[in-house]
Length: 89
Image 1 (cartoon, rainbow, N blue to C red):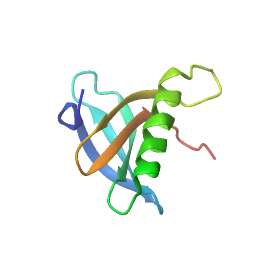
Image 2 (image 1 turned 135 degrees about the vertical axis):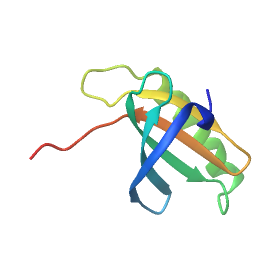
Image 3 (image 1 turned 180 degrees about the vertical axis):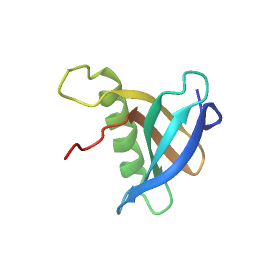
Image 4 (image 1 turned 90 degrees about the vertical axis):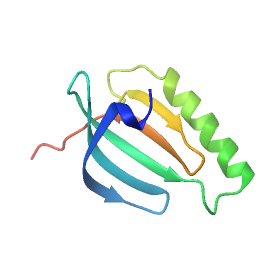
């Protein structure tokens, strides 16, 4: 899968590592969170650590951990797609 399989809906937040958007899978219409992490300014070690972190997330399956649905990489950035968690008040 890649970014073409999603509709990016709206910006949810941003931080020092990237931006998080609310998204929707095109085929299932599932609402997801999409975290885009720019590679620009990151060292080779940072890029390596990001790839390792994504592989660890890919294997994590637990009822108390938000599940990673997808992850992909472009020449400019990483995108990690997870379940959308909404804070209930």
